[in-house]
Each structure stands twice: as C-alpha cells, then as structure tokens.
Length: 163
Image (tube, rainbow, N blue to C red; front, top):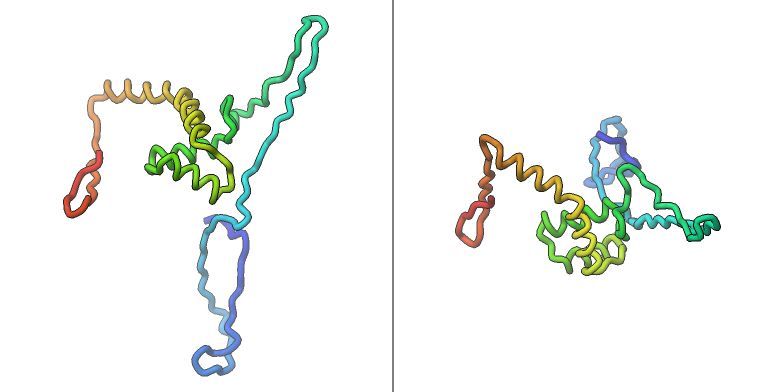
C-alpha cells in the first residue's frame, strides 16, 4: 500500500457524552481515503522547434519534436497520450457521449476540448491501434476455442446477457 501524502491526527478534547476529561490510551484507528487533488490542473507542454536556414540546401529546416519512447503526444494531436486514452475509454468503453466527454474535460479537468478535436484524435489513435486489433482478430479466428462472457444485466424487469 502506498504511503499517504498527508496524515491528520484527530483527538477529542473531552468525552462527547459527559464532557469528562479523557485519559489517553495510545490506541488508534486508521482510515485512508484517496481523492482527486483540489488544484487539479493540466500540465501544458510547449515544444519550441527552431526553424533555421541552410544556405547550402537553400531551405528552411527544423528539428522533429523530441521522440520520447513511447512518444507522449501522437502526431498532430493537442492532447497528451494519457488524456487521449482517458477520453477514448470514457467514450468507447464507458459509453459516455462525445458531449459528456467534452463536458467532463472542460469542466472537471479544466482542459478545453471540442467534439471535433476529440473525434479527429480518436481517428488518429484508431489508425495507430488498427494493426494490433487485426492481429488479435487473426489470432482469435485461428484459435481452437473462443470464450464468451455472458454477463447478466437487468433492463426493466427482464434479465439480458451482455456479450
């Protein structure tokens, strides 16, 4: 279990029932909670790419953005990978509408995103993941057995299965 970022000590000054003086026993009970920080603020990274002129080639040149392995931002994306994947999970896995994802990011996370911008970045993410998806499909089709998860859920008064 990770160490807490802060520890708060709580003592009663007097007995809550009779207001009598308390004798300290040294016994404690611990309670842990995790929460999103109050000052949740996105980290904005700006890469300054210096454009220089090569007199020999007679053209402007500039470095490519730094390649961190894996890169922390997909090409032509304004959201970092963690943010992009979180938005895709909220939409495609949790079933939030694009408007709800936009509202979540704009209000709760204080990151200004637009529906069109998200969709464009989801397409870029899909382009990156399509090869893995197709590999999983090929391996599944060649598998001797496939397993299904028939998780039950109630809709109204009727039980249905999710596949």
